[in-house]
Image 1 (cartoon, rainbow, N blue to C red):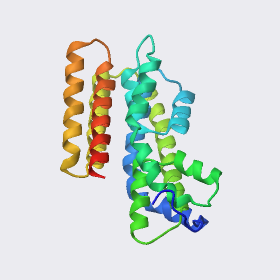
Image 2 (cartoon, helix red, strand yellow):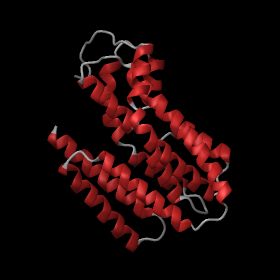
Image 3 (cartoon, rainbow, N blue to C red):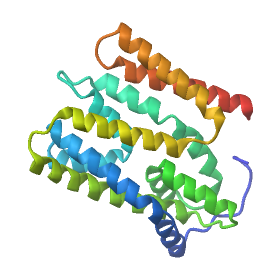
Length: 236
């Protein structure tokens, strides 16, 4: 239970290594996803440094692709920030889940572990806990491996985008859509997820028909996230 007294958690080099090895089956998908992001970012005119910094500092594949989708002149900074915040609201629940793991670990290790936490690293870390392991370093090791793969793939994708020259933007739109579908499939936990997804899709379609620009992305994300959070609390 969060807030209960617990003995200090272990945090070892062996746990870091096990975490890095634990996400190896996921790395090919992360690399492919990162390549698509890098190519699409190059098509939007982002520099290599900008792509590298976005992968290093933001480290959130879905959010980065949504930001690219919203990218236009003038740059809608407020919309992009709100959209990214809404998309990542689930990290509040994920963070609350792992909070008891870091009792006595220290702030630096805890905050770095949370910074590197993704849906994938969180998932393998939870599975590792359920198998009876208790090393808090597992989450950081898994996240660090994914961070390195994402950064490398994003930079490589930017180089590929520059080599291909002018390519039909519709191609990258289809690629991004395809990877979002794959990403959603990885998030699927059962029929309980269907209603928020349908509400998000319906809201996005309605707003797209009524308002110009890219407000439909923010509206769909907000509607689906709020309903999903409410259903989660109701079932708890």
